[in-house]
Length: 233
Image (cartoon, rainbow, N blue to C red; front, side):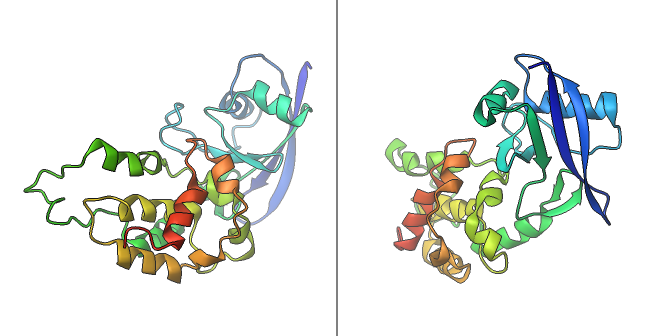
């Protein structure tokens, strides 16, 4: 396989189109390397987002051949092996407003997240005076959900959002609600779970794509199941 044939969905704020590029294939590279090579060597007008390069900031999510990935931590060899082709189509994350090319707008999602009070509402035992103490066993309940980097991959893969992007909350928002509702130092669980119900929590279709696609291996579907059972309230 000597050449990669890349088709990228472009958007200039007014019109959309697909543009083709050809790049010589190199072993051991990431998807970020490929997109950077296109921008630096073929088309400086092409826009995408990348920052930390270490799966920490969550900025570099895109869709490749219809599936969502973080480009910084996804080996190009793995993508080629998955799809068994050297023809790759790149598109922005689904269920987001697109700003330009592969760059999406996060502000509306953050506004939605405010509905569930995504912060600790400390109990007496979880207060500053008590040192916010928590046992290792208690922390383990929420340790995985804390790993969320707000990359938007789960949102892009969510089938319910694809059909109903009105009041339905994003999977990462449900995960954030669980993270604080299950925290033993928090007293806002009931109010937070009520907010998720208003956010149509019960319309989750259990497609499990939020879990299977999460680059941090968070079982988002399980956190949604806990919220649906009225966990910890």
